[in-house]
Image (tube, rainbow, N blue to C red; front, side, top):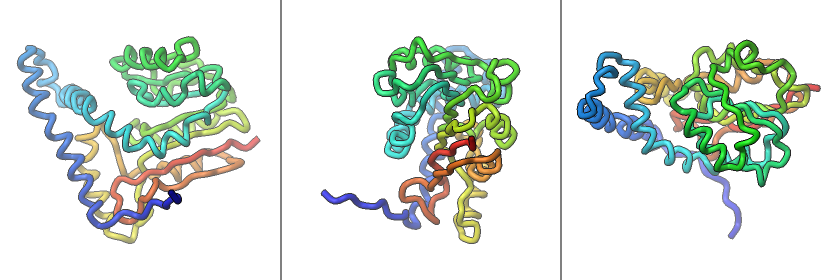
Length: 267
């Protein structure tokens, strides 16, 4: 069968964010009932704690679906692409760790999983073991902005930085990107798959994206879909090679577009 090139999406794709928001909203009531039945009332007194509990319950359903949807783009990027000492930024529960399975990535010598949410650490370590990475995967329980101080990561010591759908939700992403760049060795690679601000700023989708983003972060754990993350990456420092592209088939009707690819630090 001949290969086909994914075609840009049509106008109906503008409605997709509404569907995703409805999926998240559906889990508000089950979360509320579960907290009441378990007499765990503390999250009910704190909007931020309730959002965390709500998103955790929602993500049990949506996380695997999100991974399945993104896998065709993420797998070719990550599989057999990481090498040496790696920084895995915001890995969560480790849903992508199977791509770094030791059997297929013999060039990996160490992976630091930088995950500030300690509630994710147990499952993250378990998934590292499942991927045969138990001896090389180390969880660092701090934010990416603290890697040089609390994390013990020295400048110029990292061969590969991995950011998969995390820069959209972490605080001060532009500053963190600039602080991560010096950690890369000359010739080191940054692997990226992230939500970004639409490139079609003169079209309706740009206004629609900003409207959706007024409520999107509340339903998706702080995710901001209007960040120019690709531009921040390009401005972080000197790159020898840049291979970035849009998500497969994404165009002027996609409200939640992506950038995917690699950046290689100048030697």
